[in-house]
Image (cartoon, rainbow, N blue to C red; front, side, top):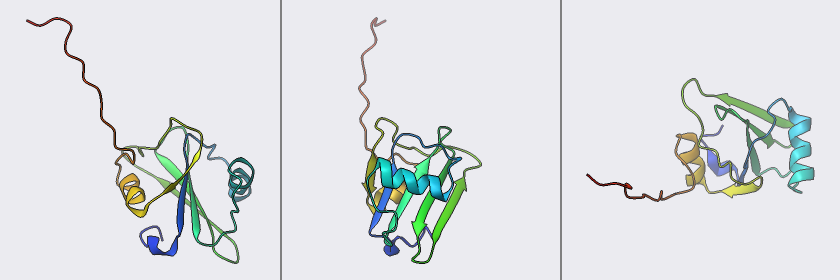
Length: 118
């Protein structure tokens, strides 16, 4: 299902964390109320991640009902964007990177020289 991304026009991720105790109705409410989007758009997938970052849920409308997918990693964590509580529309390449364990935001870390040199 998630390997064939050509079925989706939009791949949305809810940045920050979402309570993964929510089921279909709760996640649908998050999409409608917090992000003001239509969860019944057939060509969109909505991804949510909890605080632990080792599991995600995906919500997809299939035309006659919702499909709720749940993935839990045995080792490692998803590199989920935590800095904002917003919705992002990912490209297919960003989605693949996220599922492979890479960060979707390229970042450069500042390096400071040591305070005291020998």
